[in-house]
Image (cartoon, rainbow, N blue to C red):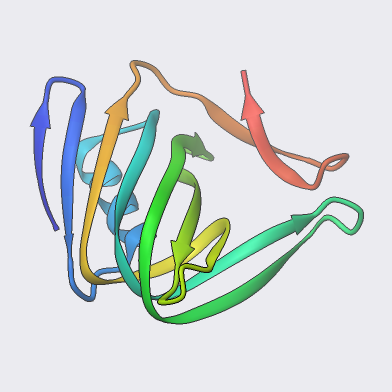
Length: 139
């Protein structure tokens, strides 16, 4: 991973073989990023995406493999228990232009990943909601 900072914005390049979520988390830890917005594009050859089923309060995960374009990577950075907390969604297009999307658990870069992080001044924590079954923003 390489990056350059411009004021409150980071431009990040992920290399072949790097895992997206862990790379962003490491950058946030090392740079002290506590709140921000994530966007990006690139290419991946392995990903785990999920869908949260509201009636059961469970995530259902699906592993995708093969050449895929990251057509959209969006998410946010917050804190939970003093640690970096990432909430990222992804859309991936396969060789037939079928698009799969959902909550991103992991994705491995196959060529490059181009990610922007827009840092927001301050910090927002998260707290688990029994009612919803998710870690929600806590203001």
